[in-house]
Every structure is written in C-alpha cells, then in structure tokens.
Length: 128
Image (cartoon, rainbow, N blue to C red; front, side, top):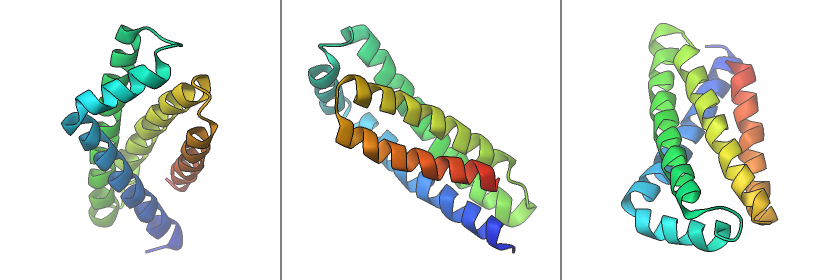
C-alpha cells in the first residue's frame, strides 16, 4: 500500500472518531447542546434557525463519520477512495457551518480549532 493511501486511511479514521463522537454527543445531549447554542448564538440568530443548524450539523456529522468508516473498508478491500472522499466532503460542509457559527458569535478560539480540522479535511480530499 502506498503512503498516500495509508495517510488517507488515517485521515478517514481521524474524522470517523471526530464526527461520530460529536454527532452522537449532539443526539444524546440534544437539550444541552441546544441550550448552549441558543445562549451563544441567540443574539445573532433566531431560535428556529439555531435548531435547524443543530439538526443539520448533527446529520452531516453522523453521515460523514459513517462514510469515513465505510471509506476505510473500501480503501482496504476495494482500493477505492470514492466513499471516503464523499465522507470528507460532507464533513467539510459540517465544518463550514460550525465555523460560520463560531465566527459570528466571536468565538475565535473555537474557530481556530475548526480551521485546523478543515485544513486536515482538505488534505484528506487531496489524498483521495
């Protein structure tokens, strides 16, 4: 297996962990996440928009994490990067939504963390 494939598998594994954990946290602690987002984003966005964003990001994270898992298997057994690439693209969309919320709410430290994840996602997309 060539180094680029190995690196791609590791990037997929990273985002598998990040997005499944984050998505499941939002599912199992929906009330806590909703309350936190309403407190931090409430001055900037309406409550229904915040709810829509929370649900959208949760779905995108869970889909992305699942596709990253399937993508790892697909790379190993079928030598195909397609499913993993789709997982990375969907995860990147979730990261952009999160980044937008962090920037609007002036949480620049949170935005920095998302930027680091986004850079790694772009590396994963290039490796695909």
